[in-house]
Length: 172
Length: 99
Image: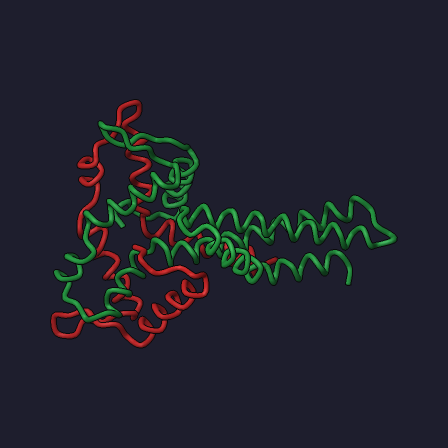
């Protein structure tokens, strides 16, 4: 197989590798922020697969640095596109409100008022504030919350821009 | 590569369709800088309708749940989808206490 074919296969199989690395990391770092654990697993997996590509490249007698760089770029674009999907899949299982509602309905059929007693506004807000603090995005002081990191703030501006481009209202 | 990029693009859609409460909180706290934002002010940003009932409506619209008399009931596809995510988390060694 050529290096480019290897890169394509690694991109194709990357969700499986991401899952395996994530399963190991999730067991090793149980008390840590799940989002940070999955991100670390994704980056470590990328590093290992890049090393593997480098190893294969070193075995090729006709190797050129240009070929390696092209294959590396191809792999990284495909890998992180897959990783973004994997991260979102995990995030749905971790933070998704629809999944939480489905989960509560799996336990028992509920009226809307009973559902909002179990899973209502106050709980949803508190869970998210705690999670944002655990992820290092917000910090809680005596007078309230402050921004600690600008990473999710940037993501928030991007999401608003994207919503405006697609013509969605802010009331969804 | 096309599949990878296509999947990533599809994942962008929910971010536009449903406002993420976490991102809304971050944006509100950022707007109030340099002052801190109180818990109650963050809570005022959301209503039960916006946080829960709109998502219930999504589930009804997509056929994952139905209304039976006055109760919400999962359809077989809703049941299978929920079980898939619970199974996925079990494989990761994680309990489900999300939301």
